[in-house]
Length: 327
Image (tube, rainbow, N blue to C red):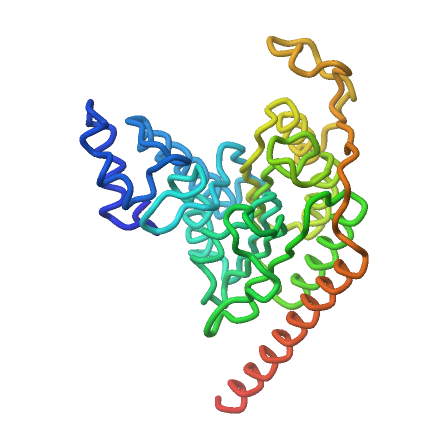
């Protein structure tokens, strides 16, 4: 965990596990972001270690060639910062896994499908030319974390390697999938990634308490299938998803795709079967939420991103030519 996180922060999480009276640490907890959305709990360190350890082990499996795809549905904690918790995330297993992959792969592409902006991952790599981050999320006043605008494209040498696809509420499969896949296609052309990390937070599904997008598991499936065509070492992670039955529906479908297994549309009988009523099927309805994303706005987002990536491609080519002429 110290591969990314500050030592004093990790030590404090560890201290929580040994402290029986949590009230004694409340004042110090606040400076580490351990407040209302990341409450202190003596089991936090153990959970953080298990979660990040699973993502790291998954990355190692890819590096060792044991598999082309590795999955950790308990991972995907994209809000955690180097020295503090944020947005239910105590540890950033994604950053740790990407850093691990970078030990072997020169260029790693990170794709975030969660309804919230992947701010912690973006912040960690915004100055890097070796990690490109792409986040598609809801972006509107008052919606957490409030970052991830179209003009946020990285800093310093990393300018252009950060891509944000900010959408308004009500986004549906029919515009989400084409937009995301076109951006992914261009990003691959420009960046030529050697490994891929995809965070599949399911809180953009219709019926989620986040009350934001109107997606179905089909949107996630098609985006993931598009990336799987690249046949890169791929790490798939979980993330948000606060309607448990719908999140389970989505991740079950994605798991089946990864395993090349066709599922029945009916939910099988099991302990929690009644939670999947009234239709007891894997599919969910997109609902009737108004789509606030106009065709003109989506076209502007697409064109701006493609222009930025074209500029990055041009500057990268010029840099290569300069380096070759110098040599």
